[in-house]
Length: 86
Image (cartoon, rainbow, N blue to C red):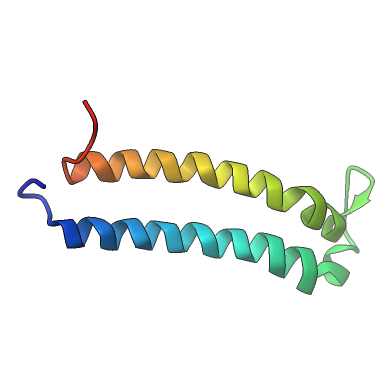
């Protein structure tokens, strides 16, 4: 660890990022795909009700995007705390 932070600060930032990613995934998969499905089904996307789309595809797409976002943000975090691989 460099002077820019300690191990505890690094893990705190890591867990904060992970919590944000999980909250987004939860909102998309559970809230949009299950709880708000009836409201969202009034809107159509590509001929399919939006609630159905979120339940079937939206949560998967969101998860894949979150993987890349998490990896990019962790790269930045690793650089910031000087724990990156050379």
